Amino acid sequence: MNPIDILKTHQLKRTVCREGILSALLSANKALSEEEVKSKIDGNFDRTTFYRSFKTLIEHNVLHKIVVDEGLVKYAITIVGKTPEHHHAHFVCKKCHTVSCLDAFTFKVPNLPSGYQTEDSDLLIKGVCKMCTI
Ligand SMILES: [Zn+2]
Ligand SMILES: [Zn+2]
Image (cartoon, rainbow, N blue to C red; front, top):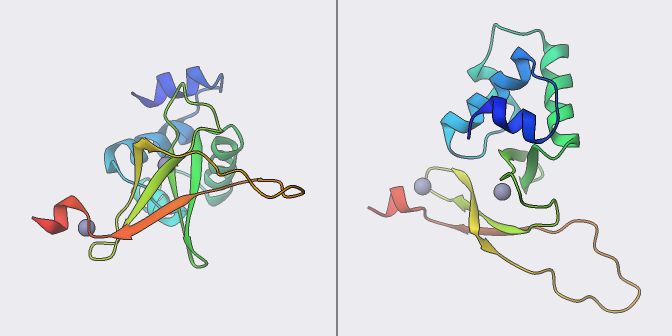
């Protein structure tokens, strides 16, 4: 996976800023907050360009949001070929605070009582990651 292919798959125009955001996330290999992404590509773009590009990537489902808690939101690249309805678990490490996508661990949204409608769902598992267990 590289930024150019990802943008192409989503039929988005290539821009240096979009490619920068995607490379930052690809090389991090974990979910990052908006600020963390920004700090990785800092100096290259003004705030407006950065936030606009970030928003576009989210709107087109290139990135998905992981709400860890009220003050912490992370973003990860959505695996190409999976629909937005594809649900996978997320993991938060209590020691190193790394947030990662467990792409292979999918779950089905349970059937809800009649009258209830699902808009969004997330499975967030908290614990200690592989790196911190060793
Ligand atoms: Zn850890
Ligand atoms: Zn994810």
